[in-house]
Length: 249
View 1: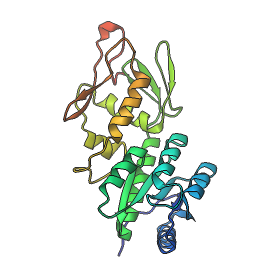
View 2: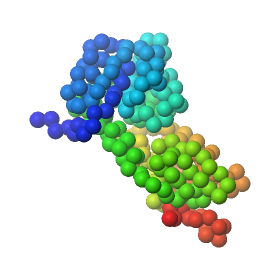
View 3: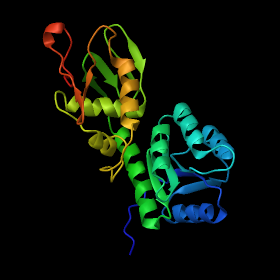
View 4: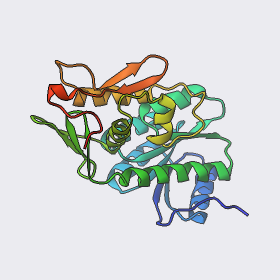
């Protein structure tokens, strides 16, 4: 008996796949496991529907006629940073996997894939989205007060907008002030990915660099220190500087 967990609330899934048999099969599997799929066959249609509609997840093939899956992924990530994107890649196409993650994909599945693996991957992204929504209220990170519901952060003289993933990164760093957080842990807890031991990707580094540009003072040291070969260490700020320590209430 298949005991794979299904969502308690039906999630809307956009399937972008040019092969009829795979597209229909994905839709049938998603319906069977309690999701609400909509399927299109080209990158152009996928991008249009994803931008116009409200979807919780996009299943996006890398190899599409016309507009490629990688370009669709990049445009969606820019326009809808919180949208979950699961890339479908050819078996053994490691370059496609890395390129997809760099373009902003949350996870990937290689063809041919088992139904059980696909549903598990979709379930991980659904749980990650639910987990991000459970970061309630406000918390502190260095000089910033982060509003997790409003997706904003404020210091004594500045206010910035944040994405849900950036809030999740700051929330994890606030709990681990002074300790090294590995890229593997970030991929697992913030991106909701699994089996990342041998995955080479710069998606974490790209997101951290973007976050630093938002939260770091031009005249001060970065609030998130890079520890070469290990990960990142959130700084603990001295109270003598007049700023609260990272993670302080």
